[in-house]
Every structure is written in C-alpha cells, then in structure tokens.
Length: 157
Image 1 (cartoon, rainbow, N blue to C red):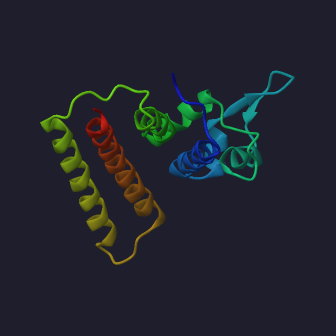
Image 2 (cartoon, rainbow, N blue to C red):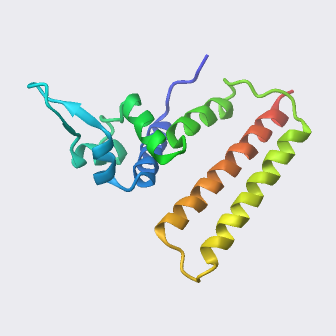
C-alpha cells in the first residue's frame, strides 16, 4: 500500500512545484502555459498569484492540478514533479526496485559525469547564472534519484 503524504511530503511537493515553475521561466511564463476557462467560456491565463500559491508552503490548501503539472513539464522538457513522485514511491518501499546490477553503477557514473559537465560549463566564465544553477540542481536531483534507487535495492533483505 502507498503511504499517505506526510507534512514533509506536502512541503516537498510545493518545493518541486516551485522548481517546475522556475524551469519554465517563473510565474509569468507558467501562467501563460496554464489556460483556464471563465464562466463566459473565455480562455485566459491563470493568475500569477495562483501559480505562486501552488509553490508556497505558506498556503498548504492549494496544490497544482496534475494537468497543469503535465503542461509545465512538457514545456520544461523535464519531469520535475513526476520524477519526485516516482522517487517517493521507490524511497518508501512501495515501488518496484529489483535486483542490484551493473547498470545501476553505469547510471550513477553517467549522472556523476553529467553533473561534472554541467558544473564545469557553469564555472567556465567564473559566473554561475540562474539557468546554470537550475541545470546543476537538475543534475544533482538525477544523481540523487539513481543513488536512492541503489540504496533501496541494497536495503532489501
């Protein structure tokens, strides 16, 4: 059975929503990617304050609907929230992890290599910009995901 979300999970989901909004260029860009239909049948962008509410832990009553998550992940070219959800299932033992194999180490090596490349590129001009920090965070998340998968596999009896 899948474990219910804890308070920490809920806060993490808000954080990942914020990462996703940042990945598409912030609340303004995200609002344009999330159209809503008003009572008159008119389509318009969702408001920026609403997008912000999806990402802030000060409002734990509002979460981003899954169809908006999908739109933003497509625009970002990466599954930030969906990866977090999948990783959560593996971490809490409810997902399928399988046996340890050579491919686990190859995937970890690839992710370490990707992090090195992204970090070297970011440091090349001596100034790390916001986009480069985002790329570094993504590379770190990818590495953490692979390490978590391996950790879950070796934790099995």
